[in-house]
Amino acid sequence: MAVETRGEHTARTEPAWDTSVPLETAAPQRGGGLLRVAVGRVTGALVVVMLLLALASLSLDLHRAHAGLQDVPGLRLHDLDEEGNLPTFFSSLLLAFSALLLLCIGFAVADSEAREGRPWKALGAVFLYLAADEASRIHEYGCRLDALWLPDWGILNRRWVILGALFVLAMAAAFLPFVLRLPRDTRRRVLVAGAVFVGGALGVEMACAATFDAWAGTPAVIVLRNIEEVLEMLGIILFINALLRHIGVHLGGLCVRVGVGLPPPAAPPAVS
Picture: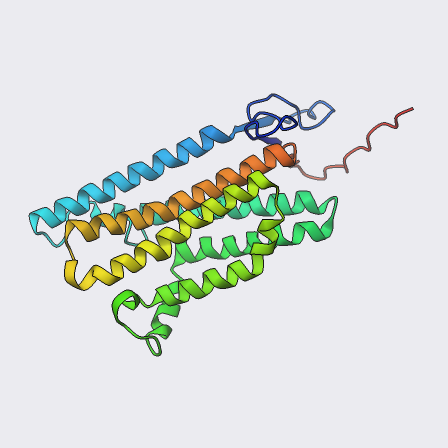
């Protein structure tokens, strides 16, 4: 099986994402196939799913608040601010997909330069942890511990905001030099995706925490909570878009050979 992605035209030497260019000069082996990934369609599909989940969550939550109910059927299954439901499953899939793309890029780059592949692999490992955390709520154990020493007032109403800020600073210190070395188009997209994600995870979260005591249960807080979660998911989707475009534009596509006992790829014929 071969997998190919293409990115949009960003320079005269960059191919368009829908350009039909084979990944290998030789024809696919018997029983093989070629999967072409249109970056725009993948991104659009993920955004549609995100918007449907957000619409279901917001409408059910606002209905609950308007009717003065404690709960309504289907809310916990679709609530963006809850865990262990459909939005959480979708978010964990987004993070896992990001991790897979990062690791694929890391191994592809390492074929030519092992050192260049290490940051991609390290970032892929971080996203694997984030996916596992989103699915299994590992962070709740940290929240129980931080209650022993972190204050609980104003923007710190939700204590994990401090832990989240420390995590963001650690990630910036570890990976910002690597991001700044990326090609200009990839760097711009990655930074925008990170800003959107952090803006939701920390910025809107702090706004919710600061107004929670006075406006708890009001439509304003409900909308803010949903905006927070939507920005987090949108940031990951933008990051996936950036990775797919990087694969298509700067790596010329991605070839994955799957099989049992595959022989090593044949060396290209010598040019006389």
